[in-house]
Image (tube, each protein chain N blue to C red):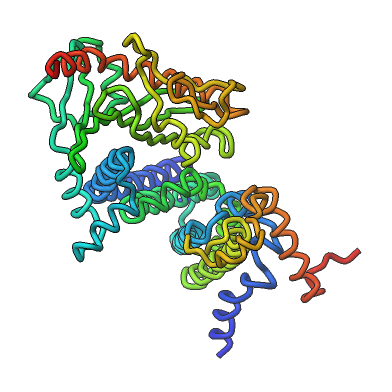
Length: 209
Length: 254
């Protein structure tokens, strides 16, 4: 049963204690850019999850054959191929969302989480473990994205999934949407608050002085 | 085989690259029809938007008939309202051999002037005629484009729709927002004497609320001078090619 435990850890560790965004502080750029609305954030999260999981799987399967000298180039090639595939599929089946994500799908290639997992995990582990590690890290990334996007869309636009959730009577009483929430600066602050709360709840995450 | 030898490295790279290239080529080919459809649908919705048939209006119409708003219904509405589409030559005559909807303005404008064809879409909604003209130009960073709909008088603007590839969010990218597009409604492109003026985006002018619809001016976006100039030029440059056609239409009427 040790194996089952390991698989479970691979999936759940990155959600909290080893979260790529809030603990390892990777992939911040895209997390700030596409968390204005929930829908693009979810599509982005899924895209990253697919790319990390499958690039982990493919690189792990090739890990004993990749010449060490061109290791990074081969990894980039795998990631780039997957990203272009995801981009093309989004353009064909989720056109509106793909327009909102614009360049950020292409920029998954440069997301440190992807290369980080390949170097740190896939090159040294079996394909199935690597695949699960990719799913876990993609989910960890997505979780933070969705939480940040939830607050930004709710407070910034007064909507969730583009549906009005703040009743008109609030606006009549003088409530105004906080346009600051739509700017990347507030995304960083929201993320900061998230990390603050997380580290207060789990003191072991704080660096020792 | 020695995994650190040059030959192995080159062979490995060649194989991986080939596999990746084949995979991508197949994927692009398979997905192309769906992507083209999305683009056509976007074009049709953008054009209908300028004459007041925005997504909500179309969805309302579809719901009233018990239909869902998808590619098929959008195409049906487009064909219903846009009875005529012309590809115009630079002298204002119609080129029958070209399908106006398929013209890609970006590639078209790279051709020599006498080979260029200018698409115009003519709609009739509730007895009123509208003329929709596609726009294409350069913003600050990259391409900008759009559509402008004129009323039957071929002078006042019914509505506009703008798009951009990479203008600055919060500044140049504001051209796609409703408040900006609203300003154009009712503006006139000819002055009282019938001289073509276009519509100029102007900063700090005396009419920030845009009450004066006869001055051929709308409020530009602060901090986005070059995008604003791009929009002004785009409207000026593109509409210019339709003036001979408008003249003909007017003569026919009189």
